Image 1 (cartoon, rainbow, N blue to C red):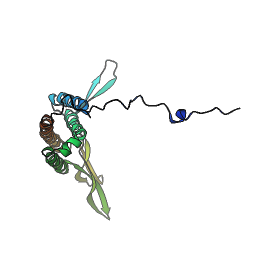
Image 2 (cartoon, one colour; image 1 turned 45 degrees about the vertical axis):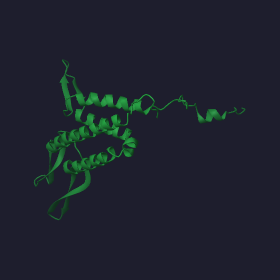
Image 3 (spheres, rainbow, N blue to C red; image 1 turned 60 degrees about the vertical axis):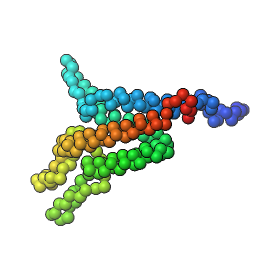
Image 4 (tube, rainbow, N blue to C red; image 1 turned 90 degrees about the vertical axis):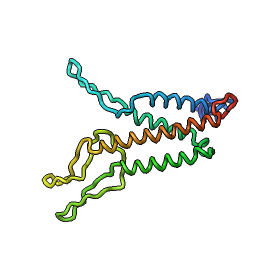
Length: 199
């Protein structure tokens, strides 16, 4: 059987539909992102939850309602990433972004749950905190610092970290509001959406 001739283009694959002549209009992406932020911020900033219902035939259905606070915070973080080059070139906004990042890190350190491990040395039980830190979901079942001598294990509790989780997201909303205000001011200062602007 004779070998079929293969065109080099077939090996590489079909070319993308993207045209090199097409313009990358970054201001349009920024506009869309700002619209999504406006929608997410206009909602009530409440935690996510699971809605459970039972039908007449006994079937249980669970619907997860997303955390509005996380949606808003993540949408602001996206616009920060999208506009990072502009922010880095702006003498006013650049230091404010630095302050935002510092405060965000400090807030995480203050509110993050740190994983706990039990270390046994003979009959002595010692609580060891690992380097693993995270912000848990509301009502997460977490290992507490209380040790159950009968069961020989640390006690787990639902919602053990809820107060700190709530505080974290409320403060993140405040930080993001401040940073979003600065971004809006910067866009106005740069006349960012002027018709002749091309990216």
